[in-house]
Length: 84
Ligand SMILES: [Zn+2]
Image (cartoon, rainbow, N blue to C red; front, side):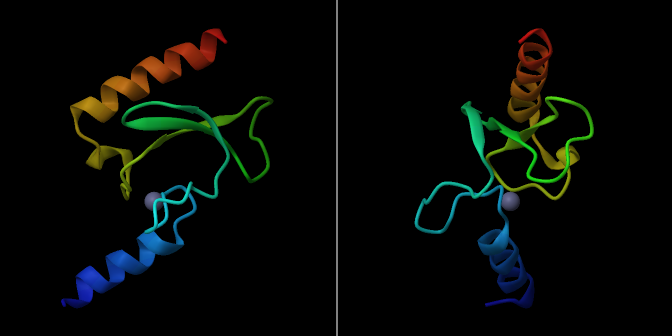
């Protein structure tokens, strides 16, 4: 097993936006679940009232790693969360 793989597994198992290895729900609160991303509220201080997060279900280091499907859903969620 490579060091890289082990490091990645450790990050995933402690990431509170990701599902657990046993498919347990993410520790972050889920407001709405999509197919590629979900809407969560921040567990830190809100930057603005109603501040929420659009989280890709697959762990990404940055949003730039997300593929087009993820981006499409993020755009739709962002739109809906501004009109909510
Ligand atoms: Zn994660």
